[in-house]
Length: 72
Image: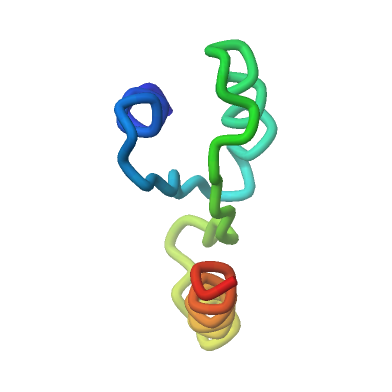
């Protein structure tokens, strides 16, 4: 988060990646550090040791969402 905020304030286009477990904390930290509009991409956290097809589909969907999000 701090790297993303530092880079954004320095004028660099920045996207911070966080999994859904940390989304609330990431947004709170961005706000607390003066950059509530920081671009944060949230992806689903996989379950530890679970790399079954369902988890792979979540990753593929997150990649599609990222592509859509970046091209807006």
